[in-house]
Image (cartoon, one colour):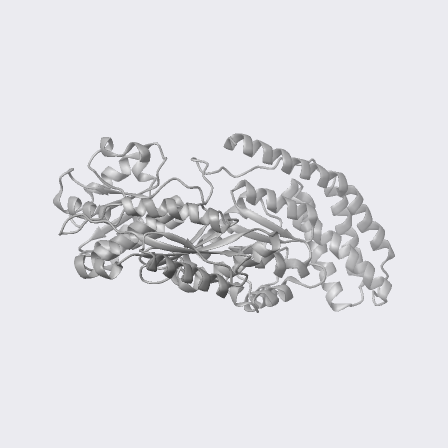
Length: 554
């Protein structure tokens, strides 16, 4: 869908929510007035306590949602009532005549605020290319900014990068920029050696397409001042020279993984239906996948099949508070590091500090504009993924490591069981890899592993998961795919690997791989799938290698 049409559609849906909110506003404030007239000066009876809870729930919802739906004066008027009724609810204290008079004036202000006209809802701009996180546009390309196309250092580095399977070009002028990059059809990263000065940076900064790309700078000087200069010049990464090409490759692998990653996933725990819809529509506008939970008791069930990058949680909900719910979430190892952002009108510092102590990462003040919500969620979700890569990813390939591909397998089995869909696990092993290392050296062996990684990543679906299971062994989890379907895909990949040419000082060579496939539900548990795929892999090896075998049913 055209991004402008998508924005128009979202605005229409948000404005519809805003109109619906406005239509209920007078009735909700009238209910506040009615309940307030029933609360005695000493709210200690059960009936009075129930009325107090009800009136607080209404003003709390108005304080947290009015501005989001185009009624900022309603939020401003409801906020002090929210704080007062919260204190009364928590302390069960008697009202003084002054407090009663103050609440009466505040309710009058709230009634007056409902008469203000509705303001239009504004949306933040999407990225210029309209791409959401997770869009697939091919392998990342390295552009080496050099003084000339035949610069010896740039030529040597470019050859080394290509040996790892990454496209690489030397750019000395705007006409050297590959057409795919200029048209923004292929992700790219710019590299420049600034040891001799900043003339190459001037070229990067005055060439518009290069100035918009991630920048890696290198220099023989690596002190604090040099690194600070790199940061101020907009560098994503600084490398101290001399460095081995695989150091640069490892960072390119991370950038390639980032370019092809799935959209951010956010769970929204919010009991107010209109606000939950508002958050969901706003985040989905930014390409973020969401799940809404309105009952706290359903949160764990939603988390187990969704693998979120962030949890948005209202601080005050029925059944239990957000603080209690956060403590329950943190009891599960899989969710100990997932960011939890509380949505609240709460301004008391002591409560915010207690919330952070109990597992919250931050507070987002209600009410929120769409742009504030998107910015807060994207920045924290991106940071969470960056930190996860340090522990979840193999440094050379950027693939999931051994333990995390198994964790993904367990999660996908749960999802497949729930949806009654198939699932396949493929174990891939490069044939005679020890011979490659012994003949051509470990550097060339690493190049082979990285090139096979690129081929797998670029040809498999985005919903498939790839992990480096061992030295030269990979595991591929393929949701919604039966054994025959997985075998057909792996046969195509096997032929592509066989046709791939690798380079060494002794000349070009090729490698093959063998593969074993096991499928759910025939293999019902994670261990059964792994042992079945392993057995099929070794059957492929025994049958002559360079083939794909399916595990027999246990």
